[in-house]
Length: 312
Image 1 (cartoon, helix red, strand yellow):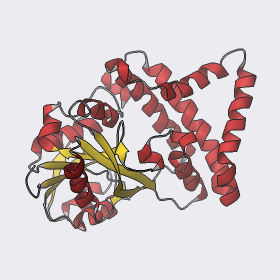
Image 2: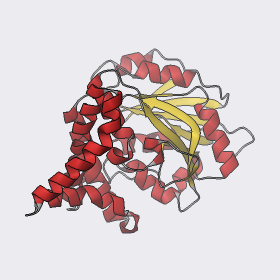
Image 3: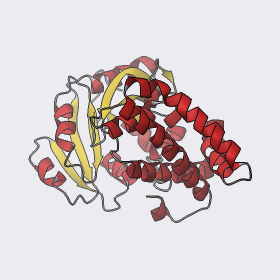
């Protein structure tokens, strides 16, 4: 990379009117001077997202007729002029030094891709419970971008920043793995260097606000992860079998034993959260099984090859 790499910030969006102002304000407030463009790739928003963006100087609006996030990122990669490609989501707010820390981490580690933790910001008790479930190892698993931790090599990161040319060389984002495009992309990037979690790369995001929304989200995650495993069989990790095995156990003759043991684990895992914030902790106890069962059912369903459009 150059002495001071230029940066393209890419933001795929669809109906983000509630959050896009805060997102773009954070991008505009970056301390790094080498940001040369902000590409916002819209998948056909029907709310006020496009009107809000139209009044923003320095933001270029691109069209994503396929609507898929992976397709949006590939459109941005094709148009990007920066040495480094920094991905941002429309419902997240990056810290003022976010881009600067991404550049520093890339240069100091020589990694192929870097990223940081996703910190949820919630107000209502249900949303706080969802945020706690997402951040807990019991809920979303041990990935450092969910639960935090010290800097180091990881399998994948939240959002991600990487050299633009390297991303093009590995083929960009796969459009046949549903919403698991980040993890699948990281698999191919790891062949070219480390994927690095850096604790100084900070951002916040707004989690789902309903249990139904979480169920739909994790069902899609499960199906999409199965699609990735079909494509990269060696990428499967033992922990990813826990949720599908739970679903199978609950359908087996020993379902009462399985349900009892699982319920005890959830209660124990949520006890501290309940003591700290009863309403949010109780919500967390309801959300975690929703996450696991939805992901497990989605994963089992996703083992059967399906048309691309059914993974969205």
